[in-house]
Length: 336
Image (tube, rainbow, N blue to C red; front, side, top):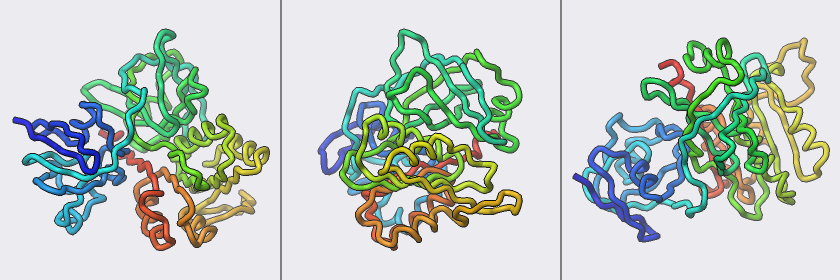
């Protein structure tokens, strides 16, 4: 059994199989919705059900309230169709980027901080891997398990794919990366995935990263630098302590390019650090610096609590929903 789905306002149509996630069906048929985490945490695939009925096999996603669900709001990465549907969602224009499954060889493993490993991958010489800065890939592991990590480089320097992998306590894959994996290891990747990339507007940009949310925003900034952008970019990076910072490249760019501004933020400090910079929650520092966000595009990447808190604060400072883009990281699946 399958159901027909019509998209408003474009009029595009596709079919969804019984018990198939609506986002999966759309992507399978060449229709791109905004999406990020694919687990219902980030809220990027939020849309509206105009007619018909959807349900959630795993229960309501964390970023969708019962009230919003009853009002017709839906997260299409987690919803299945119970009937034919008419939905409203912002589509992403088609381009030449195609999702692929490829072998990849580990060519470099370098610790960037006490719990972050920079991994570089090389793909087969006869394969081109087109992507947009800010997207992510999945590692395809045994027993149908997957692990997702954002690309930290720009497509203008795609001789290697760069990932920043945080060690998760009890995490099977990340522990393997830190303790056992060697250079020349062969892995399988699937991607690129996600719709977290810079939109082409004339508005100045605010990039806000928490932890390894630094990775996709670094890739975005690298792409903007390659394009010699004249847009103002304000890059904020929130980490727990000074030892978590590894931002030498961003600091260099900010020192050399007048329209690039960088602000590291520590949530806690130690006397031995002799820290003279900003402290507190990174989203609150952004809010302190920009009381009116209506003229900015904001891109933020990091843990769900940071994303949720920032959305609440920024909405009070006149940031339109259409100018807010996020990539929410949830590390819980690495313990499975």
